[in-house]
Image (cartoon, rainbow, N blue to C red):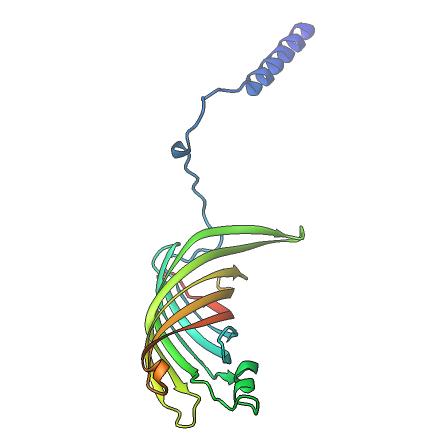
Amino acid sequence: MTRILTLLISGLATSSVAIAQETVDVGVLRDEDISVVQKLLYSKDGRTEFGGYVGWMPFDAYTTTPIAGFGVMRHLSETMGAGVSIGGGYSLKNASYKELEGPAYGVSPDAYRYLGSALAELAWSPIYAKMNWQGNAVVHHDIYGLVGAGITVEQAMLPDNAMAFAPTVGAGIGARIFLSDKAMLKVQLRDDFLLEKRIKTEDTQGTFLKQNVGITIGYSALGARS
């Protein structure tokens, strides 16, 4: 009797393993049939982001400009946000400017120094990703693009220091690197286009199109969800 029970149990176990190993062929799935739903470890939806940054505008023909500022953004979803950014700085003469005003040329170019700007912005964050850092940590980050509009204040570097208040549109790209559920580092490249009215010299009278390209790094915090 014991032998019969042993054979019966062995047979049932073998049958169970065979059934578990069977696969079901569901055919070929099309791309539109696949939907992946993932709960993000660090969520932005319904939260307000606020923080500061420092950076540089290194690409102007005649100036180099340290900058700093702060911004606030309300995340309407995981991918869309709206906010404001306020920045300030002070442009310095670069090597080209100094060479032109030196004894060899004796000419001061009609350059304008950046003083500050305020823009309303929309951000789109289509990418959320994770990286394995040297096998020791998983780094969560997202990639975003932004557009904005506002005003920039600049000042002529010629002796009379004329002021210019320039309508501004901007676009940029950046990355948020999450440190925790409430803190992140931000790296950003933004290009602002200024419509600046100048009256210093004949070749710059009227509306002058200028670009301010800034590279920044900052720290932001996320508030509670509401």
